[in-house]
Amino acid sequence: MTILEIARELNVDQKDILDAWSVLAPQQNWTITDDLLLSSAYIDTIPNELRSQIDQAKGHLSIISLAQYLRLPYIFLSKQLDQIVVKENYIRLSQLPDIIMTSNYFERVKTSILESLQKATEPLSMFKLQRNTDSLESQETLFYVLLETIIRSNELKGTFRGRREKSIYVPHSYRDRQISLITSLLEASGYIEYVTVEHHYGYNNPKDLLLRQNNDLQLLDTCAITPSLLEKLQDKIENVSTTGYYIDMSEHVPFVFTATDTASLLDIAVARIPKKQRPSILGSRFVTTAEYLKSIVSTAQSYLDRRALQEIQNEKKLHSGKGKKKLSDEKSTTKLTDEEIKDYLVKEQNLNNDFATFAVPVIRRSMQQAFTKALQTVYIAPTTLNNGLSEPILRERDILRDLRRKIYFTRQAVLLFDDDSARKSLEKYIVRQLGLQFLFHIAILNYLENGENPGEDIINTTLEEVMKEKLTKFSNDQNDHYGITELIPTVLNGKKADDLISFLKDTPPDFLGLDSLDENAQKYVVLYFTKDTCNSVTKALTNQLENTPVSTVTAPLILHLTSILCFQALYHLPLYVSGKYVPHIIKQVSVNLNSNDNQIISNAHTMIMSSRKDSSLFDPNVLQNVYDLGLKIK
Image: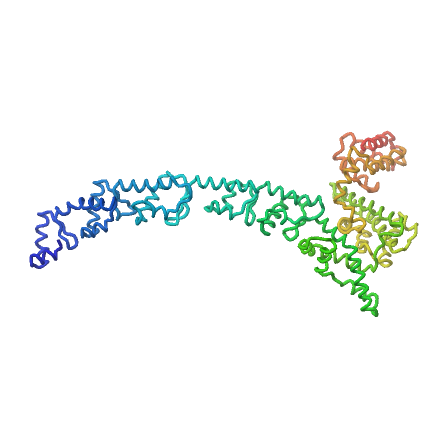
Protein backbone atom coordinates (compact mmCIF):
# COMPACT_ATOMS: atom_id res chain seq x y z
CA MET A 1 0.00 0.00 0.00
CA THR A 2 1.01 3.61 -0.40
CA ILE A 3 1.76 5.82 2.58
CA LEU A 4 -1.18 8.01 1.64
CA GLU A 5 -3.56 5.04 1.58
CA ILE A 6 -2.39 3.86 5.07
CA ALA A 7 -2.70 7.39 6.49
CA ARG A 8 -6.25 7.69 5.22
CA GLU A 9 -7.12 4.22 6.48
CA LEU A 10 -5.80 4.98 10.00
CA ASN A 11 -6.83 8.63 9.87
CA VAL A 12 -3.40 9.84 10.91
CA ASP A 13 -0.84 12.16 9.45
CA GLN A 14 1.57 10.72 6.82
CA LYS A 15 4.49 11.87 9.00
CA ASP A 16 3.28 9.67 11.82
CA ILE A 17 3.11 6.73 9.41
CA LEU A 18 6.70 7.30 8.33
CA ASP A 19 7.90 7.61 11.92
CA ALA A 20 6.19 4.35 12.88
CA TRP A 21 7.47 2.65 9.70
CA SER A 22 11.04 3.53 10.48
CA VAL A 23 10.71 1.67 13.77
CA LEU A 24 8.73 -1.31 12.52
CA ALA A 25 10.38 -1.86 9.09
CA PRO A 26 13.60 -3.33 10.42
CA GLN A 27 11.68 -5.54 12.83
CA GLN A 28 9.23 -6.84 10.22
CA ASN A 29 11.65 -6.86 7.20
CA TRP A 30 9.50 -4.38 5.32
CA THR A 31 10.66 -2.27 2.35
CA ILE A 32 9.84 1.29 1.34
CA THR A 33 10.26 2.45 -2.28
CA ASP A 34 9.08 5.81 -3.46
CA ASP A 35 5.76 6.17 -1.53
CA LEU A 36 5.08 2.43 -1.38
CA LEU A 37 5.38 0.28 1.72
CA LEU A 38 6.09 -3.37 0.78
CA SER A 39 6.20 -6.41 3.01
CA SER A 40 8.72 -9.17 2.44
CA ALA A 41 5.87 -11.59 1.78
CA TYR A 42 4.70 -9.41 -1.09
CA ILE A 43 8.17 -9.09 -2.53
CA ASP A 44 8.45 -12.87 -2.47
CA THR A 45 5.47 -13.07 -4.85
CA ILE A 46 7.31 -11.18 -7.64
CA PRO A 47 9.00 -14.31 -9.14
CA ASN A 48 5.63 -16.03 -9.40
CA GLU A 49 4.11 -12.95 -10.99
CA LEU A 50 6.98 -12.82 -13.49
CA ARG A 51 6.54 -16.49 -14.30
CA SER A 52 2.80 -16.07 -14.76
CA GLN A 53 3.04 -12.98 -16.96
CA ILE A 54 5.87 -14.30 -19.13
CA ASP A 55 3.92 -17.50 -19.75
CA GLN A 56 0.90 -15.48 -20.80
CA ALA A 57 3.13 -13.47 -23.16
CA LYS A 58 4.42 -16.73 -24.71
CA GLY A 59 7.97 -16.50 -23.51
CA HIS A 60 8.95 -12.85 -23.38
CA LEU A 61 7.96 -9.91 -21.25
CA SER A 62 8.75 -6.24 -20.97
CA ILE A 63 9.79 -5.05 -17.48
CA ILE A 64 7.80 -1.89 -18.13
CA SER A 65 4.61 -3.86 -18.71
CA LEU A 66 5.26 -5.96 -15.57
CA ALA A 67 5.93 -2.80 -13.52
CA GLN A 68 2.66 -1.32 -14.73
CA TYR A 69 0.83 -4.54 -13.94
CA LEU A 70 2.29 -4.79 -10.41
CA ARG A 71 2.15 -1.01 -9.94
CA LEU A 72 5.73 -1.02 -8.79
CA PRO A 73 8.45 1.52 -9.59
CA TYR A 74 10.45 0.44 -12.69
CA ILE A 75 13.87 0.86 -11.10
CA PHE A 76 12.89 -1.10 -7.96
CA LEU A 77 11.35 -3.91 -10.00
CA SER A 78 14.32 -4.04 -12.39
CA LYS A 79 16.73 -4.52 -9.48
CA GLN A 80 14.52 -7.23 -7.96
CA LEU A 81 14.44 -9.05 -11.32
CA ASP A 82 18.24 -9.04 -11.73
CA GLN A 83 18.58 -11.82 -9.18
CA ILE A 84 15.48 -13.67 -10.40
CA VAL A 85 16.75 -13.75 -14.03
CA VAL A 86 20.03 -15.33 -12.99
CA LYS A 87 18.44 -17.72 -10.52
CA GLU A 88 15.68 -19.03 -12.78
CA ASN A 89 17.71 -19.08 -16.05
CA TYR A 90 15.84 -16.34 -17.85
CA ILE A 91 17.59 -14.42 -20.63
CA ARG A 92 18.07 -10.68 -20.47
CA LEU A 93 20.28 -9.21 -23.23
CA SER A 94 22.47 -6.19 -22.60
CA GLN A 95 21.25 -4.70 -25.92
CA LEU A 96 17.60 -5.06 -24.68
CA PRO A 97 17.68 -4.58 -20.88
CA ASP A 98 13.89 -4.09 -20.71
CA ILE A 99 13.08 -7.52 -22.19
CA ILE A 100 13.12 -10.78 -20.26
CA MET A 101 12.82 -14.03 -22.21
CA THR A 102 12.70 -17.68 -21.38
CA SER A 103 15.59 -19.68 -22.79
CA ASN A 104 13.11 -21.77 -24.80
CA TYR A 105 11.63 -18.66 -26.40
CA PHE A 106 15.07 -17.29 -27.20
CA GLU A 107 16.25 -20.51 -28.85
CA ARG A 108 12.97 -21.02 -30.69
CA VAL A 109 12.97 -17.57 -32.26
CA LYS A 110 16.68 -17.70 -33.03
CA THR A 111 16.27 -21.12 -34.68
CA SER A 112 13.30 -19.86 -36.70
CA ILE A 113 15.33 -16.96 -38.08
CA LEU A 114 18.36 -19.14 -38.77
CA GLU A 115 16.33 -21.80 -40.59
CA SER A 116 14.63 -19.18 -42.76
CA LEU A 117 18.01 -17.83 -43.77
CA GLN A 118 19.48 -21.27 -44.40
CA LYS A 119 16.53 -22.30 -46.58
CA ALA A 120 16.64 -19.12 -48.67
CA THR A 121 17.47 -19.69 -52.35
CA GLU A 122 16.90 -16.11 -53.43
CA PRO A 123 17.57 -12.69 -51.88
CA LEU A 124 15.55 -12.33 -48.67
CA SER A 125 14.39 -9.05 -47.17
CA MET A 126 15.01 -8.79 -43.43
CA PHE A 127 11.99 -6.51 -43.08
CA LYS A 128 9.74 -9.24 -44.50
CA LEU A 129 11.45 -11.96 -42.47
CA GLN A 130 10.88 -10.05 -39.25
CA ARG A 131 7.19 -9.57 -40.09
CA ASN A 132 6.79 -13.26 -40.92
CA THR A 133 8.61 -14.70 -37.89
CA ASP A 134 6.27 -16.00 -35.16
CA SER A 135 6.33 -14.07 -31.88
CA LEU A 136 8.36 -11.26 -33.45
CA GLU A 137 5.67 -9.29 -35.29
CA SER A 138 6.19 -6.26 -33.08
CA GLN A 139 9.63 -7.11 -31.73
CA GLU A 140 11.70 -5.37 -34.40
CA THR A 141 14.60 -4.50 -32.10
CA LEU A 142 14.76 -8.03 -30.69
CA PHE A 143 14.77 -9.44 -34.23
CA TYR A 144 17.85 -7.46 -35.26
CA VAL A 145 19.65 -8.27 -32.01
CA LEU A 146 19.06 -11.97 -32.66
CA LEU A 147 20.11 -11.51 -36.29
CA GLU A 148 23.43 -9.99 -35.22
CA THR A 149 23.96 -12.95 -32.89
CA ILE A 150 23.37 -15.34 -35.80
CA ILE A 151 25.72 -13.44 -38.10
CA ARG A 152 28.51 -13.50 -35.52
CA SER A 153 28.12 -17.26 -35.18
CA ASN A 154 29.29 -17.69 -38.84
CA GLU A 155 26.62 -20.30 -39.50
CA LEU A 156 25.35 -18.68 -42.71
CA LYS A 157 26.43 -19.26 -46.32
CA GLY A 158 25.54 -15.88 -47.68
CA THR A 159 26.10 -12.16 -47.36
CA PHE A 160 24.04 -9.21 -46.15
CA ARG A 161 23.55 -6.01 -48.13
CA GLY A 162 22.32 -2.91 -46.31
CA ARG A 163 21.40 -2.34 -42.66
CA ARG A 164 18.42 -3.21 -40.43
CA GLU A 165 15.06 -3.03 -42.23
CA LYS A 166 16.79 -2.28 -45.55
CA SER A 167 19.05 -5.28 -45.21
CA ILE A 168 18.83 -8.12 -47.74
CA TYR A 169 20.35 -11.55 -47.30
CA VAL A 170 21.88 -12.99 -50.51
CA PRO A 171 22.62 -16.73 -50.33
CA HIS A 172 25.91 -17.82 -51.88
CA SER A 173 24.00 -20.39 -53.92
CA TYR A 174 21.94 -17.62 -55.51
CA ARG A 175 25.03 -15.50 -56.09
CA ASP A 176 26.92 -18.38 -57.71
CA ARG A 177 23.92 -19.28 -59.85
CA GLN A 178 23.46 -15.73 -61.10
CA ILE A 179 27.16 -15.19 -61.70
CA SER A 180 27.24 -18.44 -63.68
CA LEU A 181 24.34 -17.13 -65.77
CA ILE A 182 26.12 -13.81 -66.31
CA THR A 183 29.30 -15.64 -67.33
CA SER A 184 27.36 -17.81 -69.78
CA LEU A 185 25.73 -14.78 -71.38
CA LEU A 186 29.11 -13.08 -71.64
CA GLU A 187 30.84 -16.08 -73.20
CA ALA A 188 27.98 -16.72 -75.64
CA SER A 189 27.88 -13.21 -77.10
CA GLY A 190 31.33 -11.87 -76.27
CA TYR A 191 29.88 -8.89 -74.44
CA ILE A 192 27.38 -8.04 -71.70
CA GLU A 193 25.63 -4.82 -70.76
CA TYR A 194 25.98 -3.50 -67.23
CA VAL A 195 22.18 -3.24 -66.95
CA THR A 196 21.97 -6.97 -67.67
CA VAL A 197 24.42 -7.68 -64.86
CA GLU A 198 22.42 -5.48 -62.49
CA HIS A 199 19.20 -7.24 -63.50
CA HIS A 200 20.60 -10.68 -62.71
CA TYR A 201 22.76 -9.72 -59.76
CA GLY A 202 22.18 -6.19 -58.57
CA TYR A 203 24.19 -6.39 -55.36
CA ASN A 204 27.57 -5.34 -56.72
CA ASN A 205 29.00 -2.64 -58.88
CA PRO A 206 28.69 -4.47 -62.26
CA LYS A 207 32.18 -3.45 -63.39
CA ASP A 208 33.79 -4.71 -60.18
CA LEU A 209 31.80 -7.95 -60.34
CA LEU A 210 32.79 -8.63 -63.96
CA LEU A 211 36.46 -7.90 -63.38
CA ARG A 212 36.53 -10.26 -60.40
CA GLN A 213 35.26 -13.02 -62.67
CA ASN A 214 37.56 -12.19 -65.60
CA ASN A 215 40.33 -9.64 -65.25
CA ASP A 216 40.97 -9.69 -69.02
CA LEU A 217 37.64 -8.07 -69.87
CA GLN A 218 37.67 -4.65 -71.48
CA LEU A 219 35.23 -2.22 -69.85
CA LEU A 220 33.43 0.18 -72.16
CA ASP A 221 30.85 2.82 -71.29
CA THR A 222 27.73 0.63 -71.08
CA CYS A 223 29.10 -2.88 -71.45
CA ALA A 224 32.11 -5.16 -71.12
CA ILE A 225 33.65 -7.23 -73.92
CA THR A 226 35.74 -10.40 -73.94
CA PRO A 227 39.28 -10.59 -75.37
CA SER A 228 38.00 -12.88 -78.15
CA LEU A 229 35.45 -10.33 -79.36
CA LEU A 230 38.03 -7.56 -79.11
CA GLU A 231 40.43 -9.65 -81.19
CA LYS A 232 37.80 -10.23 -83.90
CA LEU A 233 37.01 -6.53 -84.07
CA GLN A 234 40.71 -5.66 -84.05
CA ASP A 235 41.26 -7.99 -87.02
CA LYS A 236 38.68 -5.99 -88.95
CA ILE A 237 40.46 -2.78 -88.01
CA GLU A 238 43.88 -4.10 -89.03
CA ASN A 239 42.49 -5.47 -92.31
CA VAL A 240 41.73 -1.90 -93.36
CA SER A 241 45.45 -1.43 -94.02
CA THR A 242 45.30 -4.38 -96.42
CA THR A 243 42.09 -3.41 -98.20
CA GLY A 244 43.13 0.24 -98.47
CA TYR A 245 39.55 1.41 -97.95
CA TYR A 246 37.51 2.26 -94.86
CA ILE A 247 35.00 0.57 -92.58
CA ASP A 248 32.20 1.87 -90.40
CA MET A 249 32.82 0.19 -87.02
CA SER A 250 29.26 0.92 -85.89
CA GLU A 251 28.17 -1.71 -88.45
CA HIS A 252 30.52 -4.34 -87.03
CA VAL A 253 30.03 -3.96 -83.28
CA PRO A 254 27.01 -5.46 -81.41
CA PHE A 255 23.80 -3.48 -81.94
CA VAL A 256 23.60 -2.49 -78.27
CA PHE A 257 26.87 -0.55 -78.46
CA THR A 258 26.46 3.19 -78.02
CA ALA A 259 28.57 5.70 -79.92
CA THR A 260 30.68 6.07 -76.79
CA ASP A 261 31.20 2.29 -76.60
CA THR A 262 32.36 2.21 -80.22
CA ALA A 263 34.73 5.12 -79.61
CA SER A 264 36.18 3.44 -76.50
CA LEU A 265 36.60 0.16 -78.39
CA LEU A 266 38.50 1.92 -81.16
CA ASP A 267 40.77 3.62 -78.62
CA ILE A 268 41.58 0.27 -77.02
CA ALA A 269 42.10 -1.59 -80.30
CA VAL A 270 44.21 1.11 -81.95
CA ALA A 271 46.43 1.46 -78.86
CA ARG A 272 47.38 -2.23 -79.28
CA ILE A 273 48.60 -1.68 -82.86
CA PRO A 274 52.22 -0.55 -83.40
CA LYS A 275 52.36 3.21 -83.95
CA LYS A 276 53.68 2.99 -87.48
CA GLN A 277 50.85 0.64 -88.49
CA ARG A 278 47.98 2.45 -86.78
CA PRO A 279 45.05 3.39 -89.01
CA SER A 280 43.28 6.74 -89.04
CA ILE A 281 40.10 7.07 -86.98
CA LEU A 282 37.45 9.51 -88.15
CA GLY A 283 34.60 10.63 -85.92
CA SER A 284 35.35 7.90 -83.37
CA ARG A 285 33.58 5.56 -85.78
CA PHE A 286 35.25 5.14 -89.16
CA VAL A 287 38.58 3.33 -89.65
CA THR A 288 40.70 4.14 -92.67
CA THR A 289 44.32 4.81 -93.62
CA ALA A 290 46.33 7.91 -94.41
CA GLU A 291 47.08 6.38 -97.81
CA TYR A 292 43.38 6.02 -98.60
CA LEU A 293 42.71 9.62 -97.59
CA LYS A 294 45.56 10.68 -99.89
CA SER A 295 44.04 8.61 -102.68
CA ILE A 296 40.75 10.46 -102.22
CA VAL A 297 42.59 13.71 -102.92
CA SER A 298 44.49 12.19 -105.86
CA THR A 299 41.27 10.84 -107.34
CA ALA A 300 39.75 14.30 -107.00
CA GLN A 301 42.28 15.86 -109.37
CA SER A 302 39.99 15.80 -112.39
CA TYR A 303 37.20 17.36 -110.32
CA LEU A 304 39.59 20.02 -109.01
CA ASP A 305 40.78 20.75 -112.54
CA ARG A 306 37.18 21.17 -113.71
CA ARG A 307 36.38 23.31 -110.70
CA ALA A 308 39.49 25.43 -111.29
CA LEU A 309 38.63 25.99 -114.96
CA GLN A 310 35.12 26.96 -113.99
CA GLU A 311 36.49 29.43 -111.43
CA ILE A 312 38.99 30.87 -113.92
CA GLN A 313 36.33 31.32 -116.60
CA ASN A 314 34.01 33.04 -114.14
CA GLU A 315 36.81 35.34 -112.96
CA LYS A 316 37.69 36.28 -116.52
CA LYS A 317 34.09 37.17 -117.29
CA LEU A 318 33.73 39.27 -114.16
CA HIS A 319 37.15 40.94 -114.26
CA SER A 320 38.10 41.09 -117.92
CA GLY A 321 39.64 44.51 -117.43
CA LYS A 322 41.98 43.57 -114.57
CA GLY A 323 45.65 42.88 -114.97
CA LYS A 324 47.00 39.33 -115.06
CA LYS A 325 48.84 39.65 -111.74
CA LYS A 326 45.78 40.94 -109.88
CA LEU A 327 43.64 38.22 -111.41
CA SER A 328 46.22 35.63 -110.36
CA ASP A 329 46.22 36.97 -106.80
CA GLU A 330 42.44 36.70 -106.61
CA LYS A 331 42.54 33.13 -107.90
CA SER A 332 45.00 32.13 -105.21
CA THR A 333 42.58 33.23 -102.49
CA THR A 334 39.64 31.20 -103.81
CA LYS A 335 38.62 28.59 -101.25
CA LEU A 336 36.75 25.33 -101.52
CA THR A 337 33.96 25.10 -98.96
CA ASP A 338 33.53 22.04 -96.75
CA GLU A 339 30.10 21.54 -98.28
CA GLU A 340 31.59 21.49 -101.78
CA ILE A 341 34.16 18.89 -100.81
CA LYS A 342 31.59 16.73 -99.04
CA ASP A 343 29.15 16.98 -101.94
CA TYR A 344 31.88 15.84 -104.32
CA LEU A 345 32.90 12.90 -102.10
CA VAL A 346 29.32 11.67 -101.78
CA LYS A 347 28.14 12.20 -105.34
CA GLU A 348 31.26 11.48 -107.39
CA GLN A 349 33.28 9.12 -105.19
CA ASN A 350 30.13 7.46 -103.75
CA LEU A 351 31.41 7.69 -100.19
CA ASN A 352 29.19 7.23 -97.15
CA ASN A 353 27.62 10.56 -96.18
CA ASP A 354 28.83 10.36 -92.56
CA PHE A 355 32.29 9.23 -93.61
CA ALA A 356 32.51 12.15 -96.00
CA THR A 357 31.49 14.53 -93.21
CA PHE A 358 34.33 13.32 -90.97
CA ALA A 359 36.84 13.07 -93.84
CA VAL A 360 36.44 16.68 -94.98
CA PRO A 361 38.33 18.30 -92.05
CA VAL A 362 41.20 15.84 -92.57
CA ILE A 363 41.62 16.30 -96.33
CA ARG A 364 40.52 19.96 -96.48
CA ARG A 365 44.05 21.34 -96.55
CA SER A 366 45.31 18.90 -99.20
CA MET A 367 42.23 19.50 -101.34
CA GLN A 368 42.70 23.25 -101.07
CA GLN A 369 46.40 23.00 -101.94
CA ALA A 370 45.59 20.89 -105.00
CA PHE A 371 42.81 23.31 -105.96
CA THR A 372 45.07 26.35 -105.55
CA LYS A 373 47.71 24.62 -107.66
CA ALA A 374 45.13 23.93 -110.37
CA LEU A 375 44.04 27.59 -110.28
CA GLN A 376 47.60 28.88 -110.61
CA THR A 377 48.57 26.65 -113.53
CA VAL A 378 45.65 27.75 -115.71
CA TYR A 379 46.41 24.49 -117.45
CA ILE A 380 45.66 20.79 -117.26
CA ALA A 381 48.63 18.60 -118.03
CA PRO A 382 47.92 16.37 -121.02
CA THR A 383 47.70 12.83 -119.75
CA THR A 384 47.03 11.31 -123.14
CA LEU A 385 47.77 12.19 -126.75
CA ASN A 386 46.33 10.68 -129.90
CA ASN A 387 48.74 7.77 -129.68
CA GLY A 388 48.80 7.58 -125.87
CA LEU A 389 51.48 9.31 -123.78
CA SER A 390 54.23 10.93 -125.82
CA GLU A 391 57.51 9.05 -125.78
CA PRO A 392 59.62 11.84 -124.16
CA ILE A 393 57.06 12.23 -121.36
CA LEU A 394 57.02 8.47 -120.75
CA ARG A 395 60.80 8.43 -120.64
CA GLU A 396 60.99 11.30 -118.14
CA ARG A 397 58.38 9.66 -115.93
CA ASP A 398 60.34 6.41 -115.93
CA ILE A 399 63.51 8.32 -115.01
CA LEU A 400 61.66 10.07 -112.18
CA ARG A 401 60.23 6.81 -110.83
CA ASP A 402 63.71 5.31 -110.77
CA LEU A 403 65.23 8.41 -109.14
CA ARG A 404 62.48 8.53 -106.57
CA ARG A 405 63.24 4.97 -105.45
CA LYS A 406 66.98 5.60 -105.51
CA ILE A 407 66.62 8.66 -103.27
CA TYR A 408 64.19 7.04 -100.88
CA PHE A 409 66.02 3.74 -100.43
CA THR A 410 69.46 5.35 -100.34
CA ARG A 411 68.17 7.58 -97.55
CA GLN A 412 66.93 4.46 -95.74
CA ALA A 413 70.37 2.94 -96.18
CA VAL A 414 72.17 6.10 -95.02
CA LEU A 415 70.12 6.17 -91.82
CA LEU A 416 71.71 2.82 -90.92
CA PHE A 417 75.19 4.35 -90.67
CA ASP A 418 76.41 4.52 -87.09
CA ASP A 419 78.81 7.42 -87.63
CA ASP A 420 77.06 10.81 -87.40
CA SER A 421 79.51 12.61 -89.65
CA ALA A 422 79.18 9.88 -92.28
CA ARG A 423 75.40 10.12 -92.12
CA LYS A 424 75.41 13.90 -92.55
CA SER A 425 77.88 13.74 -95.43
CA LEU A 426 75.89 11.05 -97.23
CA GLU A 427 72.62 12.96 -96.73
CA LYS A 428 74.16 15.99 -98.41
CA TYR A 429 75.12 13.74 -101.33
CA ILE A 430 71.52 12.52 -101.60
CA VAL A 431 70.21 16.08 -101.74
CA ARG A 432 72.91 17.67 -103.90
CA GLN A 433 73.28 14.85 -106.42
CA LEU A 434 70.21 12.59 -106.52
CA GLY A 435 67.85 15.37 -105.42
CA LEU A 436 69.28 17.70 -108.06
CA GLN A 437 68.73 15.07 -110.76
CA PHE A 438 65.16 14.46 -109.57
CA LEU A 439 64.14 18.14 -109.62
CA PHE A 440 65.91 18.68 -112.93
CA HIS A 441 63.93 15.89 -114.61
CA ILE A 442 60.67 17.16 -113.09
CA ALA A 443 61.48 20.54 -114.63
CA ILE A 444 62.16 18.83 -117.99
CA LEU A 445 58.82 16.98 -117.69
CA ASN A 446 57.13 20.30 -116.93
CA TYR A 447 58.54 21.78 -120.15
CA LEU A 448 57.46 18.76 -122.20
CA GLU A 449 53.93 18.77 -120.80
CA ASN A 450 53.68 22.45 -121.70
CA GLY A 451 54.46 21.50 -125.27
CA GLU A 452 57.98 22.93 -125.19
CA ASN A 453 61.14 21.09 -126.18
CA PRO A 454 64.16 22.14 -124.11
CA GLY A 455 66.45 20.27 -126.50
CA GLU A 456 68.07 16.85 -126.40
CA ASP A 457 71.36 18.28 -125.16
CA ILE A 458 69.60 19.73 -122.13
CA ILE A 459 67.40 16.68 -121.51
CA ASN A 460 70.32 14.26 -121.61
CA THR A 461 72.82 16.36 -119.71
CA THR A 462 74.59 14.97 -116.68
CA LEU A 463 76.46 18.17 -115.93
CA GLU A 464 75.69 19.49 -112.49
CA GLU A 465 76.13 23.14 -113.48
CA VAL A 466 73.70 22.82 -116.40
CA MET A 467 71.09 21.26 -114.11
CA LYS A 468 71.50 24.01 -111.51
CA GLU A 469 71.26 26.73 -114.13
CA LYS A 470 68.06 25.25 -115.61
CA LEU A 471 66.44 24.91 -112.18
CA THR A 472 67.37 28.49 -111.26
CA LYS A 473 65.55 29.76 -114.37
CA PHE A 474 62.68 27.30 -114.04
CA SER A 475 60.45 29.26 -111.65
CA ASN A 476 60.64 32.33 -113.88
CA ASP A 477 60.09 30.48 -117.17
CA GLN A 478 57.34 28.01 -116.27
CA ASN A 479 54.14 27.48 -114.28
CA ASP A 480 55.17 25.04 -111.56
CA HIS A 481 52.65 22.20 -112.07
CA TYR A 482 54.40 19.90 -109.60
CA GLY A 483 55.16 22.24 -106.68
CA ILE A 484 58.97 21.99 -106.73
CA THR A 485 59.76 25.72 -106.55
CA GLU A 486 60.14 25.71 -102.77
CA LEU A 487 62.39 22.63 -102.92
CA ILE A 488 64.88 24.13 -105.38
CA PRO A 489 66.80 26.24 -102.76
CA THR A 490 66.91 23.23 -100.42
CA VAL A 491 68.51 21.06 -103.09
CA LEU A 492 70.87 23.68 -104.48
CA ASN A 493 72.11 24.53 -100.97
CA GLY A 494 72.49 20.89 -99.95
CA LYS A 495 70.26 21.13 -96.86
CA LYS A 496 68.88 18.19 -94.86
CA ALA A 497 67.03 15.54 -96.82
CA ASP A 498 63.84 15.69 -94.72
CA ASP A 499 61.99 18.13 -97.00
CA LEU A 500 62.95 16.18 -100.11
CA ILE A 501 61.88 12.84 -98.60
CA SER A 502 58.62 14.38 -97.37
CA PHE A 503 57.88 15.59 -100.89
CA LEU A 504 58.62 12.15 -102.36
CA LYS A 505 56.43 10.34 -99.85
CA ASP A 506 53.59 12.75 -99.11
CA THR A 507 53.05 15.06 -102.10
CA PRO A 508 54.58 13.39 -105.17
CA PRO A 509 53.33 14.15 -108.70
CA ASP A 510 50.13 12.31 -109.57
CA PHE A 511 51.85 9.80 -111.87
CA LEU A 512 54.06 8.77 -108.93
CA GLY A 513 51.18 8.69 -106.44
CA LEU A 514 50.23 5.17 -107.48
CA ASP A 515 53.74 3.99 -106.69
CA SER A 516 53.61 4.20 -102.87
CA LEU A 517 57.05 4.00 -101.32
CA ASP A 518 55.72 2.55 -98.09
CA GLU A 519 53.91 -0.24 -99.91
CA ASN A 520 56.83 -0.92 -102.24
CA ALA A 521 59.50 -0.89 -99.56
CA GLN A 522 58.89 -4.52 -98.66
CA LYS A 523 58.11 -5.49 -102.27
CA TYR A 524 61.40 -3.94 -103.30
CA VAL A 525 63.32 -5.95 -100.75
CA VAL A 526 61.53 -9.17 -101.65
CA LEU A 527 61.79 -8.59 -105.39
CA TYR A 528 65.41 -7.58 -105.57
CA PHE A 529 67.17 -8.75 -102.44
CA THR A 530 66.15 -12.33 -101.66
CA LYS A 531 68.58 -15.21 -102.18
CA ASP A 532 66.20 -16.83 -104.66
CA THR A 533 65.93 -13.84 -106.98
CA CYS A 534 68.72 -12.27 -109.02
CA ASN A 535 67.99 -8.62 -108.26
CA SER A 536 68.65 -6.09 -110.96
CA VAL A 537 70.75 -3.80 -108.80
CA THR A 538 73.17 -6.46 -107.60
CA LYS A 539 73.27 -8.01 -111.06
CA ALA A 540 74.22 -4.70 -112.63
CA LEU A 541 76.96 -4.10 -110.06
CA THR A 542 78.24 -7.65 -110.45
CA ASN A 543 78.28 -7.40 -114.26
CA GLN A 544 80.19 -4.14 -114.02
CA LEU A 545 82.69 -5.72 -111.64
CA GLU A 546 83.12 -8.79 -113.86
CA ASN A 547 83.85 -6.56 -116.87
CA THR A 548 86.38 -4.45 -114.99
CA PRO A 549 90.02 -5.55 -115.46
CA VAL A 550 92.18 -5.84 -112.36
CA SER A 551 94.74 -3.05 -112.69
CA THR A 552 96.19 -0.04 -110.96
CA VAL A 553 93.81 2.27 -112.81
CA THR A 554 90.66 0.32 -111.95
CA ALA A 555 91.58 -0.38 -108.32
CA PRO A 556 89.39 2.43 -106.81
CA LEU A 557 86.40 1.31 -108.93
CA ILE A 558 86.81 -2.33 -107.89
CA LEU A 559 86.94 -1.34 -104.22
CA HIS A 560 83.91 0.95 -104.70
CA LEU A 561 81.81 -1.80 -106.33
CA THR A 562 82.86 -4.43 -103.77
CA SER A 563 82.10 -2.19 -100.77
CA ILE A 564 78.59 -1.43 -102.10
CA LEU A 565 77.96 -5.13 -102.80
CA CYS A 566 79.02 -5.94 -99.23
CA PHE A 567 76.69 -3.26 -97.85
CA GLN A 568 73.73 -4.53 -99.89
CA ALA A 569 74.40 -8.12 -98.87
CA LEU A 570 74.41 -7.13 -95.19
CA TYR A 571 71.53 -4.63 -95.08
CA HIS A 572 69.37 -5.61 -98.06
CA LEU A 573 69.07 -2.01 -99.22
CA PRO A 574 70.54 -0.35 -102.34
CA LEU A 575 73.14 2.38 -101.86
CA TYR A 576 73.57 4.82 -104.75
CA VAL A 577 76.64 6.86 -103.72
CA SER A 578 79.92 7.81 -105.37
CA GLY A 579 83.39 6.39 -104.67
CA LYS A 580 84.10 9.37 -102.43
CA TYR A 581 82.17 7.60 -99.67
CA VAL A 582 84.00 4.24 -99.83
CA PRO A 583 85.83 4.86 -96.49
CA HIS A 584 82.48 5.43 -94.76
CA ILE A 585 81.01 2.28 -96.31
CA ILE A 586 84.03 0.16 -95.31
CA LYS A 587 83.82 1.44 -91.74
CA GLN A 588 80.11 0.59 -91.56
CA VAL A 589 80.33 -2.93 -93.04
CA SER A 590 83.48 -3.90 -91.12
CA VAL A 591 81.43 -4.40 -87.96
CA ASN A 592 79.30 -7.13 -89.52
CA LEU A 593 81.64 -8.81 -92.00
CA ASN A 594 83.50 -11.92 -90.92
CA SER A 595 87.11 -11.29 -89.92
CA ASN A 596 88.59 -12.70 -93.14
CA ASP A 597 86.39 -10.60 -95.48
CA ASN A 598 86.92 -7.57 -93.29
CA GLN A 599 90.69 -8.02 -93.53
CA ILE A 600 90.53 -8.35 -97.33
CA ILE A 601 88.58 -5.13 -97.83
CA SER A 602 90.66 -3.19 -95.26
CA ASN A 603 93.94 -4.33 -96.83
CA ALA A 604 92.73 -3.29 -100.26
CA HIS A 605 91.73 0.16 -99.03
CA THR A 606 95.08 0.69 -97.30
CA MET A 607 97.00 -0.56 -100.32
CA ILE A 608 95.15 1.68 -102.80
CA MET A 609 95.59 4.79 -100.64
CA SER A 610 99.31 4.04 -100.17
CA SER A 611 99.97 3.28 -103.85
CA ARG A 612 98.73 6.75 -104.82
CA LYS A 613 101.85 8.19 -103.17
CA ASP A 614 104.16 5.31 -104.05
CA SER A 615 103.19 3.11 -107.01
CA SER A 616 105.64 0.42 -105.86
CA LEU A 617 103.26 -0.33 -102.99
CA PHE A 618 100.57 -1.54 -105.38
CA ASP A 619 99.86 -5.25 -104.79
CA PRO A 620 97.78 -6.98 -107.51
CA ASN A 621 97.15 -9.96 -105.23
CA VAL A 622 95.47 -7.74 -102.64
CA LEU A 623 93.32 -6.18 -105.37
CA GLN A 624 92.49 -9.64 -106.77
CA ASN A 625 91.31 -10.72 -103.33
CA VAL A 626 88.91 -7.79 -103.01
CA TYR A 627 87.76 -8.38 -106.60
CA ASP A 628 86.96 -12.03 -105.77
CA LEU A 629 85.18 -10.93 -102.57
CA GLY A 630 82.91 -8.65 -104.60
CA LEU A 631 81.91 -11.51 -106.90
CA LYS A 632 81.48 -13.94 -104.00
CA ILE A 633 79.50 -11.67 -101.67
CA LYS A 634 76.52 -11.51 -103.97
